[in-house]
Length: 316
Image 1 (tube, rainbow, N blue to C red):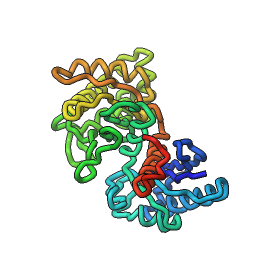
Image 2 (cartoon, one colour):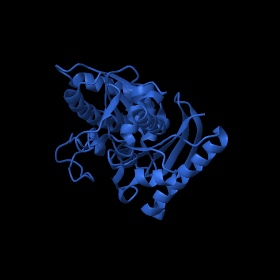
Image 3 (cartoon, rainbow, N blue to C red):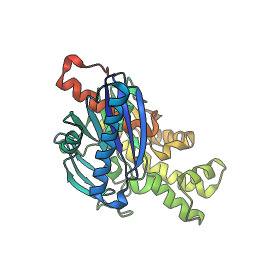
Image 4 (cartoon, rainbow, N blue to C red):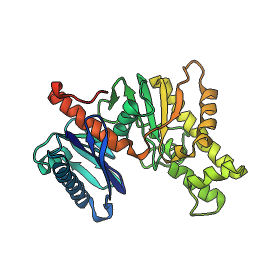
């Protein structure tokens, strides 16, 4: 059975799969990234994990994987296959495509940015399926975005497109690791809400999920903290939709797990802010934490289709 290897590398864990030509997940596995051991060890863990998957595929399906796709965080030069920089993993200028291809006996390898790769999956087979223009925004430790145009994700001239988390929504506000002050992700990411609620509640262990539960129970302090985040998020999203005019706005990540506790006030806040702009459909992501892995599989199949157009077996 023809299949590809898909890897989604995160700051703390990796998800991997063997993906069939119809997009079916034939095998799934997870492993700790092990970043505490240093960037070289992380890279070796990725290579070893991919090699194990190749062996498994050979044994189970009678042939090796036809290609591999890998999604990594940070700055990514997808065209040249280089993982340029990831603060949470500590690496710089890792020739990931070359290293993986070499370890996997020369099969073609596609490298992608984690959020853009997840956005590719959400756009084709998830919440954005059928939308010709969409914006995918996962609200996790930070905030990033994937700009969907037709059947592809726009990376930008230098690979930085979609960094909505660094739109300044509160000028002169909280310092951000990017060097600016008042960035969206400092107010509306899951980690930002966790910090705000821990401080407001007096419980250093409290997190964003706890804040959402307190909102649902009617806690006035929680409602204030939550609404502050929703307002900041709406400000950032309206800036993005003014520039991009998406048909669908897909919200994912940990904060979106609050469901309508997030989406009801967020839709209202965005609607209050638009004037001439067309209001997009604002929907939850559909694929959860499998989006990156599924997207990596799509990257691999796309690469094969580019190299051998007549062998393309996966429809967009």
